[in-house]
Figure 1 (cartoon, rainbow, N blue to C red):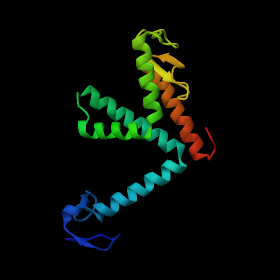
Figure 2: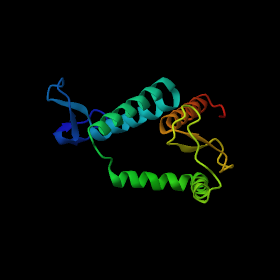
Figure 3: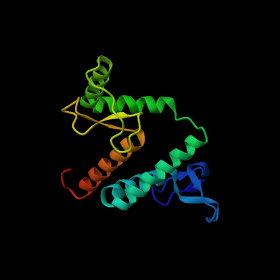
Length: 164
């Protein structure tokens, strides 16, 4: 049993993270308080430090790339929940995607090579979802780059309270 210096509650050692430099081998703050402090720090940094946000995104991309190389599959339930949540938040985007799919199928729209590198395997990119059939054709690599750039501008604008 050990007392958390943050909340003052006495808890079993299993409720404290291991820490080799502590006398008893465990952190003096319980897991619940540690998680709260971490969440608060992440929230504060994500609103104030663009460098931290960019470094964190890069770290997550590298971590995902390593997992893919090792053949690790994402949790299907978590992925499905995330997909459903995205679809509910972005109905206008889903509608535009469906319109593009139907236009390709009916021949009203023809897939073009990537406008940046000329690759033939392309995806439709919407600069404006209110114009669903006005798309740019980009390969996966360049489509991801465009979205990273758009998201970076959004984060910068949000951090500096400007409109994007």
